[in-house]
Length: 202
Image 1 (cartoon, helix red, strand yellow):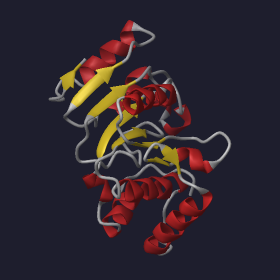
Image 2 (cartoon, one colour; image 1 turned 45 degrees about the horizontal axis):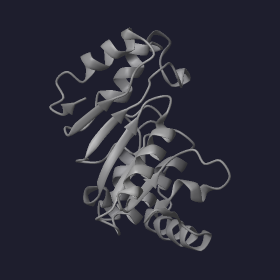
Image 3 (cartoon, rainbow, N blue to C red; image 1 turned 180 degrees about the vertical axis):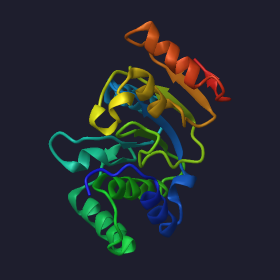
């Protein structure tokens, strides 16, 4: 399937893989606009400071390798093919979406570089997104949020308040950085949603 909002499949596959997502250091980036540019900016800063990074983004522009950066460089075609084949074999034809198996592949490879900092872009919303199975992270960055993917919400829930909830209600307790929002209303909804989150907030 292309999209099916649930965390059960990705959790089951990652359990077979040894729960690699539990063994990485991550900065999660959620929002509507500016996620990729925010990750690229953080990536540039960390590289300049001599950190090694893994980066997971979507969608790709020219080739799928763009989504899989480890030790500051994209995986080669052969490396990516080997990774896909291994994880698909472990999944053993169980139901899984395209994004979920890509995310499982990323976590599996990322765990092989446990000292690297992972920059992870959330996909559709966040609450039921495949990237949202981390138990801990270094920080969550909230970029600009606006109305998007309305087809995946009920008619009476196609509001900015609901979208803010989907993107920010399950952020981990660590550090939260909120970018400037397009309206004061959106910022208020974000503040209300993360109010009880114990993270340091900026």
